[in-house]
Image 1 (tube, helix red, strand yellow):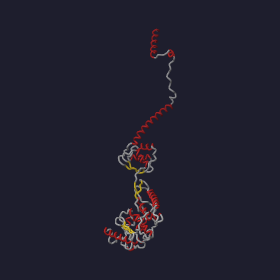
Image 2: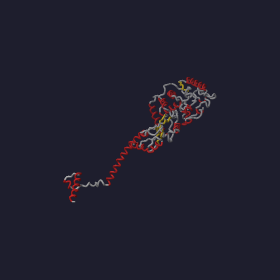
Image 3: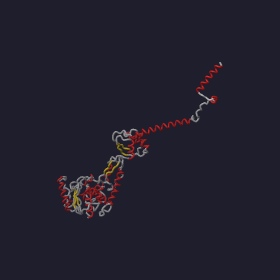
Image 4: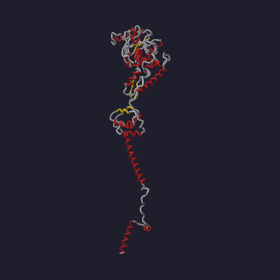
Length: 429
């Protein structure tokens, strides 16, 4: 039995040695156990830190993927299928703007728009206004448009020759402008022009622009004036320009009309300008609403240049650039009279005899056109004595366009006017 056991042990030992050859030293050495896990690795802080690090890495990967797809979405064509106008109100935050754009179908993912604006550092740079967006516009282009303030430009056109009160009324009728106007500006302090504005611009802002533009232009034009003008102050300069503005709407004859008045001032002749009568009667209202009468002509007012010497105390309207320049440098003529020619312009004369002939031709034209009733003599009835009033002054005043014919016999010699010889009502506005 002992031998059998020895043989069995011998065979087993032989099997182990064949599987794991060991040196005699190794054979007698105790076998080593695997080291236990590190106590540091098992520490809860380390475990939590590893988890957090893993989460951070995953978050970075997710953020990178989100930025990639978000950038593509931000720059890709949007859902808008046709042109659309959107009004961005004042004081709207970037989230409000994004939601408004979504409702208007300009964008479809407001959060991408908000994040894009935040990454670009432009969340507070969006400007209020009215914007027009093209079909398929990307969120990137939408943001650029809002930040640059490329809003729709509207035009506010103020014709030459309106009074300040008429200009205020015109601004109040605009549905593009907002706000109230504190007070009507002084007459002759606004520059009639076409102004570009954005929706929501206040009416007071437009008036301020008109006043600033007028001041600059008047100063520039006054500095370039002819040295021999009989006007000595800027107020007189604007006043005469306003009279010229009301007398003609044709650009090519403004300098000649200005010359007539300048020549008359140099000779100390009364200006006898019909629009000054109307302004003296109605002030800034601009229109009389009826025909001028003999009593109107004879009624003394500070503005009636048929009864006063020289210029009225202030402008009778707001003159435009052309009239200001015409007065600053009038034509070099000896003309003292002008009368309507039936085409919207006037014919001029240096002598009274020639003026009477021009008046006669005008009366003949009126008869041929049958525009004056037989019971009411045409303008010029008293021309043999002097010059009748403007037969269409009110029409000029009300429209300020002066594109219609302006039948009128013009200034006469000082003291020669016999307005009372005209039948009452023969002078119409």
